[in-house]
Amino acid sequence: MAWVERFAPSPTGPLHLGHAYSALLAWDRAVANGGEFLLRIEDIDQSRARVEWEAQIYEDLEWLGIWWPKPVLRQSERLSAYRKALKELWNQNRLYPCTCTRRDIVEAPQEGAQILGPDGMVYPGTCFPESPYMSTWPFPENQTLRLDMDATTRNLGAPRLHFERYFSFQEAGTGPNGETGLIEFTADEAVKTIGDIVLARRDMATSYHLSVVLDDAFQGVTHVTRGQDLFEATKIHVILQKLLGLPTPVYHHHVLIRDKNGKRLAKRDDARAISKFRDDGATPEDIRRMVGL
Ligand code: GLU
Image (tube, rainbow, N blue to C red; front, side, top):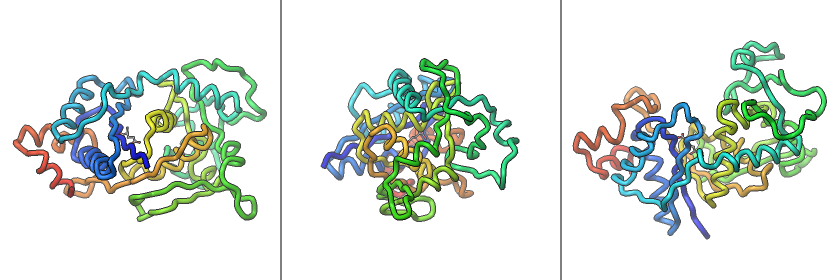
């Protein structure tokens, strides 16, 4: 079986020990299975992405002993593919425009407590159109577009007893609560706990979720190795894969590397930057040991 892994960092800061763990794990799994390792630069957030960080990523990964086919795929060069997918979904009546600010969402009146989903607060439906949205494509680029999760999942998942629809993916690692093996969730659960997520952000004409799903398929990725912080977001990815007719890779979520206070590392934790360890004389083997590989 073909085995294609990828590492997909955003060039918004230095790679730290957590990134090293993720990249080395994906690399080791590719090598152990006679597979391929790809690198993808996730630079759609042009307000935060910097070429200096991108250059540093290449340097750090090479130093760790990782290599990949060049040129790399950069998401900033894939905007027309994202737009094409949005148009397709628009024409299928799966998207609607939204003008809400974050504050509007938090302050919107609604029944019961607000639910925090994998993509922030579950959208209260303020801009949901009363009747099907009739405006034709092209839609202005600087608009937020949301996915109608109910209409999307109602007919998409596999049918089961009592006509309940469900979705699934294979987890080869573990989720934050030990979830492993076949992970299943229902359409109803997706509507209630994920809701109408943003697929096109006003400022970037795409979103992390849409881009990652399109690019994993475009690059022929069969195995995704990444942190447990993205376990719940995988449910969004599975729904989008079904909606866009794309294959679902096998997922391997891994534990997050934490600092000595138990806090997960962030980009701003410069002290844990790979380059810093390197400057202090550490070897790639030292880094492997530090992350438990
Ligand atoms: N670009 C994301 C990050 O740096 C990773 C996305 C993924 O692995 O799906 O956190």
